[in-house]
Length: 174
Picture (cartoon, rainbow, N blue to C red):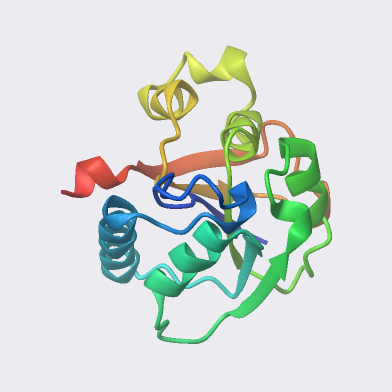
């Protein structure tokens, strides 16, 4: 019944072309470098999601592209609903994942990803008890990856149902 949930905030995006809509902003040089570092971490940790749920924004799609190829190609679901989605909306999507799916990667945006991460560890009152969740609650920068072990079904995922097992930022990988 153990499940793995990975939350990845898109890598750093460019603000160079102010005529672009927010949804259409690409990764910048720093973002591409960070995504490559996260890719190396994913390979070294043997992270292998079966399903990737990704926002339809260009910067999230380019982050996903930088993570490829996978040893085993996961199912990829690109959805507008994850674009700037708040935590409850992401949670709603997670609750619809088939129970046979063991590992899921969500690539999205803040503040929703960070809010979801804090909720999974039990909320602000539980964050202060442990250094790793406290770091995550303080800052979930672009390119950061969090891993949660879940002891519940996807349909029952809720506040406090995740144990944070990994939280890494691109800066730590440099």
